[in-house]
Image 1 (cartoon, rainbow, N blue to C red):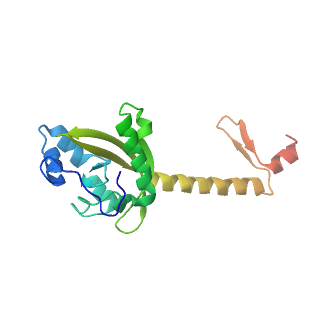
Image 2: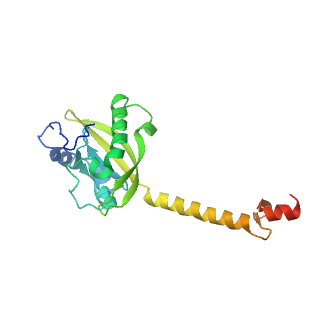
Image 3: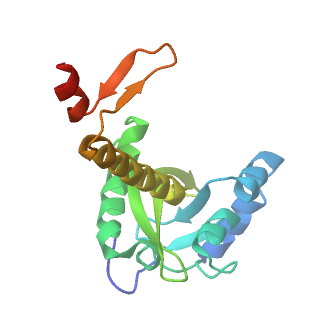
Length: 193
């Protein structure tokens, strides 16, 4: 992937990348249009050099960009240089072994929201050949809230463990049948277990 500051787009069949996206958006049959417009995951179409051909409404929603703003921009504008190298590596994997397991084409990335906030995404990359042009499809799942929830849960677990272990009282955790699942150090000292 070309990482220069002004990406060069290879020629497309119609002479400009918007024609490819327009063609894909109007493909016969409702399945592609429905997938493109209604997917709960973001979809990015881009060239090997990192030029963004188009994004679906979900990407615009997750990252806060108005419709059409990201078209013709570069992946670095969304992901920054640090993640651009990771994406480039996955693109090379996709090209060199298209039949590789799906997990080798997936990576966690941080994307820049228009407000400047970082959003956590899981990006899966595949590709398709359209009129002799290799187009990469990035499926982006927003996992920001999942990560925030996990962090909050870990923080609450740490607080509970601190309270539980540092209490001056004997404390037990038991199941509904009364089986002791855990006891703090005071309980083990008092009862000798």
